[in-house]
Picture 1: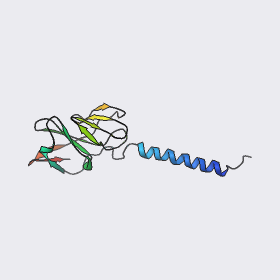
Picture 2 (picture 1 turned 180 degrees about the vertical axis):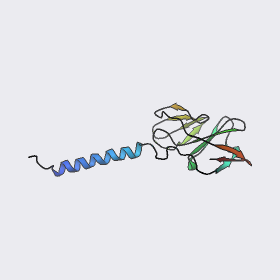
Picture 3 (picture 1 turned 90 degrees about the vertical axis):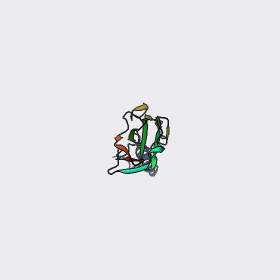
Picture 4 (picture 1 turned 45 degrees about the horizontal axis):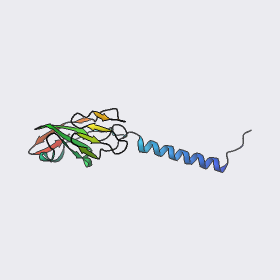
Length: 134
């Protein structure tokens, strides 16, 4: 017959389970999988998106680029690796603060991993001088 676990063994196991669970929550992919808006969202003036660059709309989890004048591209700003929201855009590269993934915000493609999947494209248009996504 086996002996029942000691108090120390039970507490140690509980501590390890808590640490393992925290890792899954912090690093697991976002359940939204970078979901696009379900209805149109006005992001701001079209003039805020530079030609050859991009603007991050972190509060909406979107990034809009203008690769050539008048041609806009929009992608979710949720990293496909761990679900973190991109924190900065320099020229046409968006960066994830969690694990260093970088994305080309004109195409959505991964420039640097660990992410392997591209950002999700979102319909976008300029209307009345405003950028509207979704």
